[in-house]
Amino acid sequence: MDSYPLHYVALNRPLLLLSGLDSDPPAHHHHHDPLLDNGFHIDSDFPPLHGGLAEELRNVFLQEDADSSTIRGSEAGLKIKTAGRSYTLPRRKADPPTVSRSSSPADEQPPSSFVLHSPLSPLTPSSPTFPDGLLSPLWVTKHQSLVPAAVFNFFPLSLDPNMSSLRDNQLKIEINGLKKQWAASGFKSRLVVVLLSEEGESRYLADVDDRVAGIRRATNLDQRSVFVLPPDATPAELKEFTGSLLSLLQPSIMEYYRDLSKHARRKRSRSSIPPPTLPPTSGTSQTLSHHGWNVRYEFKLGVFAEFRQEMDAACRNYQSAYDTLFGQEVFENIPGWNPRFNDARLLADALAIRIIRCLLWAGQASVAVRSWVHHRTRTQDIVDRRGKGTGNYGWEAWESRWSIVMAELIRWAQIPSLFEDTAHLQAGGQYPIFVSPDSAAPAAGGLYPWEQLHHEGYWLYRSARHSMTRRTLAQQIPEEDRVPPGQSPASQIASKSYLYDTYLVPEPHLEAPQGGSSGFDHSDLILSTLKTSLEEFSKRNQMRKVESLSLEIADEYLRIGSWHEAHSILRPLWSNLSWRRSGWWQLMARFGWALRECALRVQDAESIIQIDWELLSKGADPISFSLCFAL
Image (cartoon, rainbow, N blue to C red; front, side):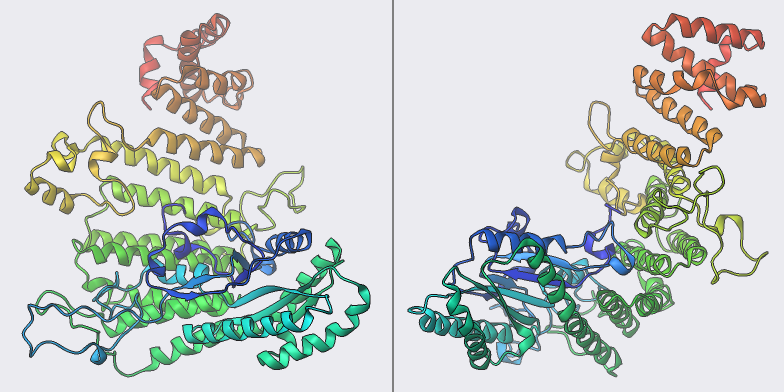
């Protein structure tokens, strides 16, 4: 799923922010994020904590950080992010637009009269969705990586009797300042304070409870918002403390996302659409329809339900958004030449991926396959009727990608009967080829064989075959369409934009570059997919398919002149081919001639003699090699 914006398709997990344990945030926190332009700054002059206890506590918290690509089910976990004392939040409202001085005085409006909306709203002129866009992946990024459900602020607690009063007062001022800043930001993130006791005489530990109670009263924080760690806490105690703290705060974290759902539901239920900050240009643009707004809100409700790990509710919201998107009022009204058409395709793919993941989460494997097939059929229909058709390399690339998506979702779901570490093996220690029909599937006789969820290898092989067709269609692109934009007349560039479907794929001059130019490497994609597929079929002892895939991998190496790689794949299989025992001589001949060509190139005389003897004894014509290899 690397082709899609990460946060558009990844599983959503509650975001927690650790502030004060890390003076140097990771490098990826330093990259420029457009959502943070003119953002709201949370500032603090308090130095970050140092020392072994702070470092160990930070590591323990980060061990609870879940990787969305590999963990599922009851282990859904949290997303934990570290920061320094200061932090930047995205703006809740966009800046007022600048009124052009060339406008007539009658047209000018004072900034105070503008109706301001979110920077990502279709009602905001600077938004990527203005005026009729459905949704931007940046909205998910905002909630998944920028706005936390809870903020853990770590401060030192002095045990020096001469400094304790002064330091406690500094803490009260600092905590109250942070509370005011977070309240002013408009975000309702839960504020949590963790006090790490400094080294000191143990006799002063008796006063800690009274001091902490005073800090709570002065900052108006409840008992579940202020915690203390002793200076001699062991790693085991830190781990237990972290687990208990996260479990204790789980209800309030869920409540945070439940409040966001309530807000989105209220906006969905309103009878009219608010006015945009500035109206779109008359005669050239239209605003987003009421059905388009419903798609937005249903998607948002699904995401917030995922944050709460309520996957059934999320699935219902996503399905509602999907059905509305493909209705007569949204997708059908977007011209195929309009960039919004590909935006709608991207949203449709994201919704379908999220629906399938919810179904796999619930154990509805057969229903998930039907959903996969359903989306493929609906996308093919809309692209044929409203888009640029399905007889081009762009469509085959989508077919390949859609199969890869299913393989990755199966890997993520870790379905017990397919996962490689499962104890549920068939007789003889063989992994099952497909998942048994689930209870939600139709009764026997109503389920087609291809609607049973097969293992990853099946989907990966399907992807590789579509990649091969993609390459074939790319090679048919006329030479004049392979010229880079800077070397083509404007009329030809415009013509190409109407001819070729470039949804998530390179332009024609990169897909099939002119001689001497570098472009997309089809062979690399095909080889990597075939090899991964081969591993899955091999686990299940599907030897005939293993042999077939090995031959296809070797054919691809022969195509690019990698003779040694092809020889190393074919030679070990030659002596024990199941095709020989089954009498499948046409396949044997193709395999033999391919291996003979490799052996000739790498000067393996022994293999050449063996192959010639066997093939000629069966009456094979050496001239047929070119025909066999072309299959």
